[in-house]
Structures are given as structure tokens and as C-alpha cells.
Image (cartoon, rainbow, N blue to C red; front, side, top):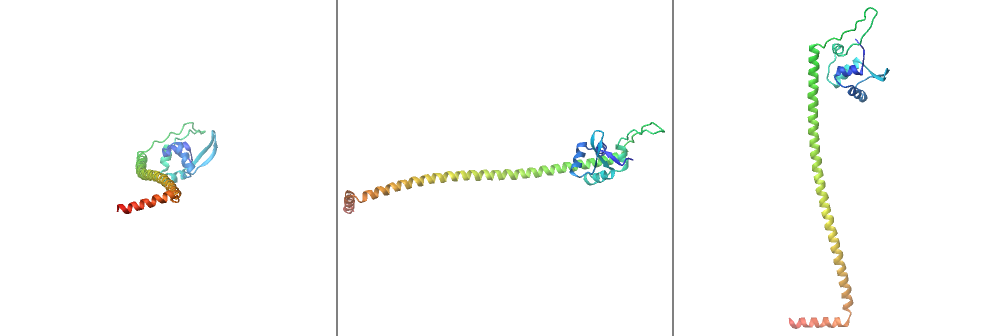
Length: 193
């Protein structure tokens, strides 16, 4: 049995794409060695590392039969015979185990997705209510600003009018004809009463 596997073989064993395998390697979940291949750098995986990864992260049990049955053996030539080694068929129990593991993984993904979706909907509701509160507070603040501007304008106008009245009063109070009119008015008020 082979001790090291290519990225395509690992993808076939785990039933994942090679892109997913590269992402596992990049995230540090799956250990690999990088070698110079015929088409540039390639990843090589040790079987024991693959078993650890499959068990810890994917909840899959990988035995030698699974590896041998899923990895297509390469043609080997020997001096005794030029026959290719035929791939072994996947046993029914291994297939059932793999199918059950995949079904469990699918259920877990669906449950995780539903939980994530519920959390997202809850957070969206919280954000919408905060946004409504913020909009309400913003409109209240704008109304108060308008009221303050109106009151400031009104106060300024009233202060201006009061200042003009005080100036007019001080101007007229010291005039002799105003003093006579004031005296006349007070006398008429006594007569009427």
C-alpha cells in the first residue's frame, strides 16, 4: 500500500474537491509536504495525517481498505509481468459506512446552516430595531433644532422690539410735552374714577 498520496487521491478518498483540500492545507487543518512535480509544486499527504484529519475534522474513519479501494492504483511494470494491477471494488460495508458518514455530515451542515440563519435573522431584527430607534431619535433631534431656531428668532425679535421701546421711552420721558401729557392723563384718570 502507498504511504503517500497526491492531492487528487486525497480528494477522491474524502469525496471533496482539490480546491477544498488546498483550503484545508492553507488553514493548517491538514498537514502536507510540498514537492516539485512534473507540473510545478505539488502537495503530498501521508496516510496517517489524512486519517487524523478525517477523524478530527470530518468525523470519518479511514481504514486501509477504503484507501486501497478508492485510490486507483497506477500501472506498474515488472520484469516478470506487464499486467496492470486492477483496482479493488469498494466493499458494501465500506460503502455503507461512507454513505452514513456523509449523511451525518450533511445533517450537521444543514443544522449549522439553520442555526446560522436563525442567528442572522435575530441579529438583523436587532439591527432593524436599533435603526428605527436611531431614525426616531434623529427626527426628534431635527424637530428640537427647528424649535430652538424658531424660539431664538422670536426671542431676538422681541429683544429688538423691547430695545426700541426702551429707547423711545427714554427719549420721550424727558420731553416737557410728554411730562404734561402724563400729568393730564393721571388727572383724567382720577376724575373718571
